[in-house]
Amino acid sequence: MSTIEQETETEETTDESAEPTVESPGERRRAEKQERAQAREDQRVDEEIDHSEETITLKVFRYDPEVEGKEEPRFDDFTVPFHKGMTVLDALIYSRDHYDSSLTFRHSCRQAVCGSDALFINGRQRLACKTQIADLDAGTIRIEPLPHQEVVKDLVVDMEHFYDQMEAVEPYFDADELPDDELEEQRQDRENREKIKMSTRCIWCGACMSSCNIAAGDNEYLGPAAINKAYRFAMDEREGEQRKQERLRIIEQEHGVWRCQTQFSCTEVCPKDIPLTEHIQELKREAVKNNLKFW
Image (cartoon, rainbow, N blue to C red; front, side, top):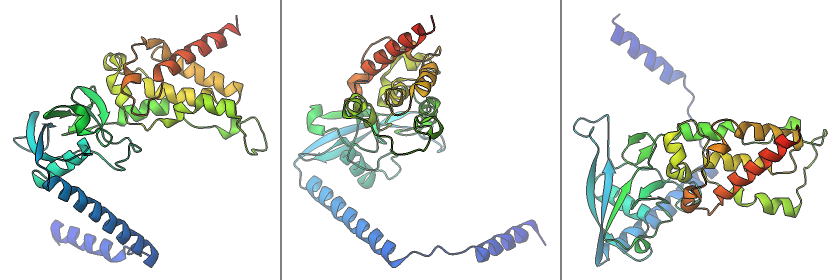
């Protein structure tokens, strides 16, 4: 038997042995309902755009290392009908659907919650779904991937390093270190909740990391997003003093809080208005106080 016949027989055997996924009637109805709602929304956007008398031009960064002739970075122009309330994400979707289906970018919720569509728009880190074209006050809008990140394709960057930095600060509660041995509900008073509230709004979009000049030159720097996440847990009184000291030791390392030069660039671009620089400075003060305990 030839190798091709053997592979074919193996594939057929695998297919026959695989159990089909059974979708319940309820799940199917919910999926169909979501599809219809999305179709209506897409139709509404298309109709509004098609009836528009104004147009804007998108100058979009393009790059595809896997396609011959597209390996070199370039910019493509797309003329898009404009309507009031239109976002940069709306314009990108229109360009993809009407001009070039290979145009690649990330998006999901369209409500500035998922953080997946952070881009470099007219020289500034922004969320495409949150950025109103009318607010840009420009006939031509330049759209690029986030700076200081490896570009995978078009506007998509590799976020693995960003996620690794977030994971490095251990952004989770350690049940073994909670004060109550019986693991009962850990209540948080209102004052402490207000203290950490803004730090919990992070959506992991990477805009702050991309804007940071220190992160651009130091690939090992934890970055404002990761340090903010460390702040969120270090300042939470429910976790206990011992765990707080451990977190402070993580961010005190050579590429931690002391690398921040207080330029406020991360705070300026944060789509959730988190006072990132203030949180970093407060952790510096906490680190100093923690070290003074042992002197």
